[in-house]
Length: 589
Image 1 (tube, rainbow, N blue to C red):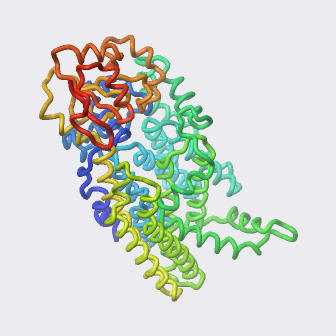
Image 2: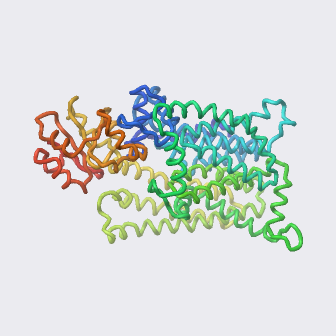
Image 3: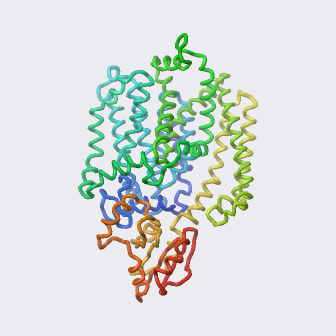
């Protein structure tokens, strides 16, 4: 199977009905609107949100979305298309590398594994930075392997070829840095350093051409940093100290989680591939424990010595992927700030490991390879059965716990729960059938692929949830036919950036700043208030607007703030909302 055919076959996973669901707030609405305001203002240096400088993240991803708007027009499909394209590009890159280093079968199996990783599918279909960041980090890490384990410059066909992997490493890291920050450089460097130490060849780091690479990195990152600091003094301090160091070491951004947080993200997000890789890894570790580097030496020393002495890149690709996955899990588990999106890059080395595992099981059908697959299938069957049981109990449990506020109606609906139960039981039964004979790796693989079908009902549930609870599209549609050019739309103690996107107009806010999903805006709130064009109102200004005969005023408020809004806006505001969804109610005077 050629890489082009693989990409075409995977495209429906990311593009089918891509523009159907409304943009979810705050993340999708915010990112899509920041890109739209780039086109509206013509400012490609400082992203804006509701007319306010929005510098929580660098602008490269916004640039790609803005270019997509120019090609496809402003809309949900154009906003999500860059993430989908980066996802497909990542599949092509992983497949190419696996084919190059571990064979054609491993190449297309690695690509299929990556394309069918639930977390990868989800983040390839939403307007968020992480798929572009994952693609950049993948280029950097694979370039590090090629530089350190491929033919050295003394054996290459020319000096330029010897420099290419190092140049790609730093170029991709630079692009990733202006996508989501220096993590795009730090993580690939950690992977390269760890691998060099594992291989006992730290001098190989010099093959990255560090001085030349630093110049390439500075040439990509430096111009934007200079421009943005010039226009927004203090940005560098916020970006380096606040957005990165404090995010990693403190709970200032309210995203700190315990060390084990990612266990509940990785298992469903990378299922079933993480289960197969873990089962195979544990089996091989037990088999290798008797090996030692000499009398009285620790049992792992012999394995380490063999790895350090290995010279064949084909034999090193899988250990390198394991090292890569381990660094990602350890690094992101150790930092304070934790989000599910940080695990998206883990899908790439996992796909390389599983591609090799399945290729060996298919190609040689050796007893130990088939046993690895069988062990993974048994584990996956147990998890599927447990998931089916959880789906059976979810409905009664939800009723017993009184979960009836509407937010979980989609996930607790009978249709969804029955579908999840059926898929879980069918997958468990098929996986157990596949383990009856250790000579059925193809059956186990097919069943693993089919078990991803649970993503289909989940995706439909997520789309329905986005439209009813997280998207500003329904209330925007309600407003479009009523708004006149001079009318005001105001958010009270909440901010839904999707309103800007769908209404194509500024939104005014009555807030202390807490509802902003931008820490940069929160930290600079007092400074922004001094600007007459700043879209924030005081309670007194809201009362005067409501009391004035014109223009028409529409105020969106979360349910918990209804009483406070009525008291602050005064008697000119209708006491009951004229429209309600799960995000809140719309009041008018």
